[in-house]
Amino acid sequence: MFAGVAVLVVVTLIFAGIKTVPQGEKWTVERFGRYTHTLESGLRVIVPFIDQIGRKLTVMEQVLDVPAQTVITRDNAAVVADGVVFFRIDDAARAAYQVRHLEEAIVNLTTTNLRSVIGSLDLDDTLSNRQKINETLLSVVDEATNPWGIKIIRIEIRDLKMSAELQDAMNLQMTAERRRRALVTEANGKREAEILAAEGEKQAAVLRAQGEREAAFLNAEAREREAQAEARATMMVSKAIAEGDIQAVQYFLGTRYVDALNEIGKAPNTKLVLMPLEAAGIAGAVAGVTELVRHAQGTQG
Image (cartoon, rainbow, N blue to C red; front, side, top):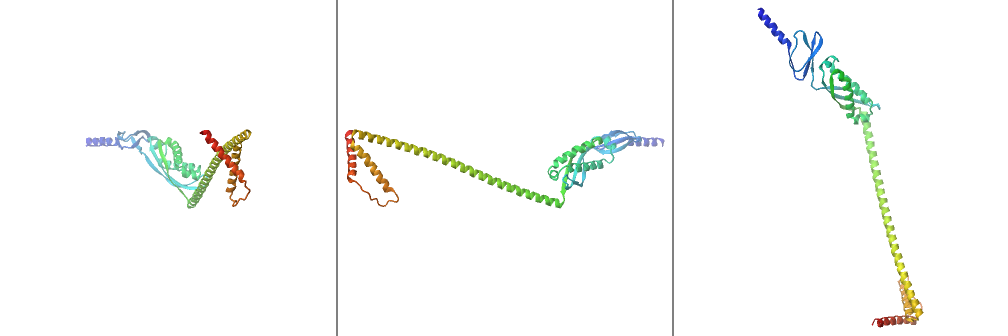
């Protein structure tokens, strides 16, 4: 009987001293109520009836819900915000003995800092800079929870809600802003069109001016050539007069006489021209021209 009792006591001591810690957990060991060490996952041995398991902690990544709460922005707009916190226990001893109700403490700390961060922003910044809010919260909460032996991996704002009145006001503001942008775009289009039209008129005016200048140069050159031809003709007539060549003079006067009659006949208001004509003069001019032609042909022969 004594042997049986002894065997039973030994078996009880063995079972009391052997602990199997699951994967992803850490257990703290207390001796007479004082923390001594931490058991890692696997088969572990403690002193039976002297050492006791204090806290069983999960070292895997955990998720906490941050309950919805009303937050006032810097421009006095009420926003209902909620989120989630992802954390991991790195030091089981500090997580077990530095803070009571670890998860509740993390949620309360996140809630307090969420109000502080959103309260420093305007409504527009709050709605458009959610990533900035997440990063700020992560930095502040992670630093505050470092003495507890935990690591805040990330904090995400899950939802931001506004009152119906504020939502309607924002919709009206957005509509007005879109109309303003449409008007600005239309005005810019008209301005660009006017600028392009003015630029086109400017280029057309420049081209017209260049064309008129070139035409003026050509007209001046033509008048210059005409004047030179006139001067040469006058010089030839003067030379013929000086030499006593009456036929050349008659040819010159005859051509001018015929040209003058041609211009009078071309006038739009001229229907009938009555003027004295000296037939003898015209005949003499024609005879002079004929004589000049014959003289020129004889010279060539």
